[in-house]
Length: 266
Length: 257
Image 1 (tube, helix red, strand yellow):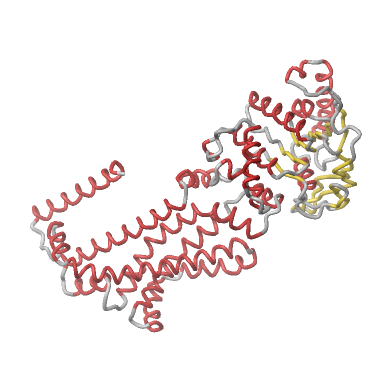
Image 2 (cartoon, rainbow over the protein chains, first blue to last red):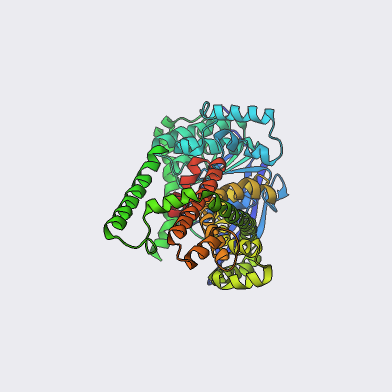
């Protein structure tokens, strides 16, 4: 199977993007000279120590934050506001507690004014794809953490956008269901040819799912290295036992240990 | 429902029995402390008169409460959504709340006359504060991430308001309405104390002035029943609008943050 996204055009491009937030003692640099591109259809992960600005980086791509300097462009157009090309998913599912599962998944259609029978059919189909059929009329409080997260994934996919931005989407799940969700995400991605940008602190997850993994330094976050993964797809959990996988995980870990060491010495 | 009502009704009955026994055993003068049975007798025998006055008080309570809800919700929304407007309005609302409303009552009579006007105004003034506060708190219950999610879906300001802020605020808003519903009855009665010719509060001033203690107790009982009915009305509306899992969740969520 050919590597999805390989040789394809760039869809997300950040050029010398800096981000500063104002703090009590003047501006605090969060991101410093971020410069890379993500190809259409690529599965791209960003790993880094906590507080390195990886979530902020995702917000820049989503258009929820503006870079202090530099540019962020999606599909060749500078991002100046919430991007109509990307949907978002967070560690918290952020489901609306007063809506049923189906009504939560129909939220994007409702907001764009296209909540009709076709949207309902699509929503039901998505719900079936993540194994939640029969739970359409349940409220979020009646669902388990993993089910809620899958519902949030359905909602993100229901927006029908080509870019999916995920901020530690499985961080709150137990390790068994995390693997299950990672496999499900890979299957959905293989089927739909989305561009996925995944922010995570789970090195295994990044290597298992990604075409490329970007390693970030502590604040102000810089891209230290972008690693090609190049393992065959579809990858199953057993791939983690192969020497290639173990070596890739070790490389990312060494990179992260390397960027942590100077900070610890200081 | 019956199971929930049984303990409080049982306790009330026990307290009344104790009271009855004390009055009988001590031989205390009815003008100081009448027996509950005597109060009940008056409540039944003179029910038509009490109900006519209860009707007047009810109108004051309902109109005052509805005005307080409209005013409180509107101010709460403005404060929650506009930082400058909130910064200007909120301190004044606190000041208005700190100011003893009983002290303004005579002025209200000068401005609005002896009719229903000043009673409704006082009811509104007393009841609107918890509604404002709970509206502001409720509107603020929205998480940044959820708000961002709406933005990224391309939601308009109106969509964010109606599909996110309002439903998120409703459970807390109803908490404010329940507090306000009890304050509204107090407002109406205080208004009637200041000068009136109808209403249960007015009736109380007359009875107390003539040492009609039994009748005064009967009036207080009717006021209590009126207040309970009004509170229950708000609870019923809440149950129609707010789903059960949200009613209990608010407390837990507020405790977490």
